[in-house]
Amino acid sequence: MPRVNRSEIIATDEVQVFHLVNRCVRRTFLCGNDPQTGRDYSHRKLWIRRRLEQLAAIFGMDILGYGVMSNHLHVVVRTRPDLVRKWTDQQVALRWWTLFPQRKNADGSAAKPTKQELNAILKDQSALKERRLRLSDISWFMRCLAEPVARRGNREDDVTGRFWEGRFKAHPVLDEPALAACMAYVDLNPIRAGIAKTPESSEFTSICDRIHDQRKAAQKRSKQAAAIQTEHGERAGWLAPVPLQPTHKTSRQKPTVRRAGNKGCLPMSLEQYKRLLEWTGKQLRKLQTDEIPSEAAAILERLQINPESWLPMVQRFRKHFRFAAGLPQSQQRFREERKRRRIASGVS
Image 1 (cartoon, one colour):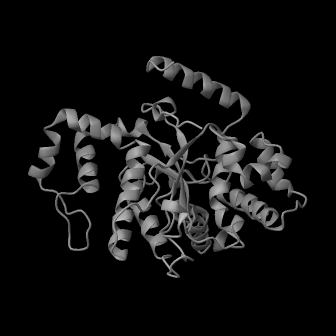
Image 2 (cartoon, helix red, strand yellow):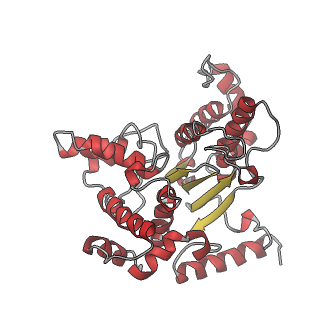
Image 3 (cartoon, one colour):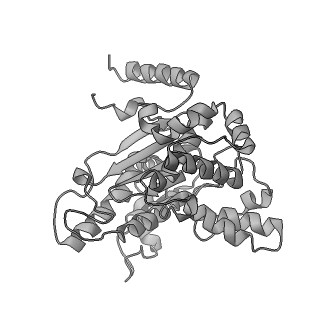
């Protein structure tokens, strides 16, 4: 199958959702227990998670979900050029400096730039305009995620060469039903692989981080404090919140520097999403279908998803939606838009 021109599927001026996948070179277990060498590289999963958290605070991009496996990683992102357009030139310059600092602290983090250093970025308006675009671009996001991990891994192994496959996969996600299936697919990766039994035990996934903060929120005395802890907690505060409509508006009004914005992603609460995952995970492990709970059935009905098709969608998400993920009408609109972009770019 020929490669897809990214310009046909990416609209730099529109909010879009993508499922991004990157694999270790030759699918080796460079982030887990490598059967070829007998070495355990599992600590590198933490490198990736920390780098994702750093990038969430810099890029104009909402990270909706992630999963770090032993030989590949998944990230679900929503580009936010609408937010990036509102940033001042000084904000763009500071974010770019943080991403590519000319000076670093002893711990390797970006040093605070001087006024002269920021002015050096600001004075080149042409370059600044391009950098503004790059801060909501998935290719630059994945480059800034993959390259530091690869360099650190090669230094640790005292080797050179590729760490990741040459090109990450970008899978457009077109509507809420497909997004729900995509997020579940990513969060349930360890369960499908047989290395975890429950969402809360699925380490290095977005759902594990969310549940950690949710449990801490249960210890809060007020519902408002619990909502803020759930959506701005230590572990998952850099991820986009799950519910589109928060239970307490104060949790969305709270300023944050850990992520691009406070916009949610699914028409359900975190508790509802967690219960849907729990039931789905049990079915995937047993490879048989128990009766779907009424609450989960109601969620799928709201998403226009037939309960019988939900499990195949989650279990084989990338094969179920081979190119763009969405309902038939969403895919038709996407094909028409892709055709328009091909014509506009002069490709027959």
